[in-house]
Amino acid sequence: SQQGEEDPQALSIQEGENATMNCSYKTSINNLQWYRQNSGRGLVHLILIRSNEREKHSGRLRVTLDTSKKSSSLLITASRAADTASYFCATVNYGQNFVFGPGTRLSVLP
Amino acid sequence: DTGVSQDPRHKITKRGQNVTFRCDPISEHNRLYWYRQTLGQGPEFLTYFQNEAQLEKSRLLSDRFSAERPKGSFSTLEIQRTEQGDSAMYLCASSLGDRAYNEQFFGPGTRLTVL
Image (cartoon, rainbow over all chains, first blue to last red; front, side, top):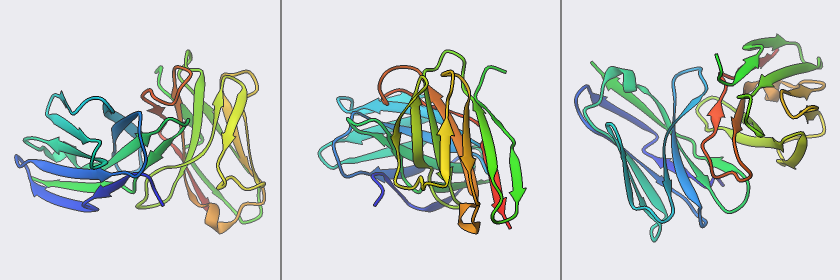
């Protein structure tokens, strides 16, 4: 099974609202990263949070990490239509590879 | 453009044919990854190189798949005797460093359709 599992699978909100998506994982990690993918395109790195960090901000993005619950959340504030995309968490354990979850498909309606 | 590039962007082939994809990473990046992504799913790891050495291959990478990075720069992924189940987006990513901890930079992908 996949290491990272995003929740919800799909989310539809109005422009200006906040969007929250969650990621759960199973094993110890070095860091957790969030990526965005527009339809038919490659992935774009959004933010990285290390295992010893609890919260991180980047512009309208806020990421939290709870290693005791093995979960992370991504909050996008004041959403825009351009935020419409799929969002993936990638867990990076003490091995060598990223493991991506199935993603959350976000639709921001104008 | 100094990002990761992939060629071709789209490939349509008939079952049983061989196909080859190319990835050009960011020039100073020593790590190069290949992933496969099917519709509605996240990328699945296939293999990665550190410089010219292929250090790990996923169980997803059957013996019909082969990847090379001969001079530690660009990489090729070849699929022999393609099957309809090979239809997917093939993504390449590169990163800098000796560990998988750093940000990966992805190319736009090659979309393969096997008829």
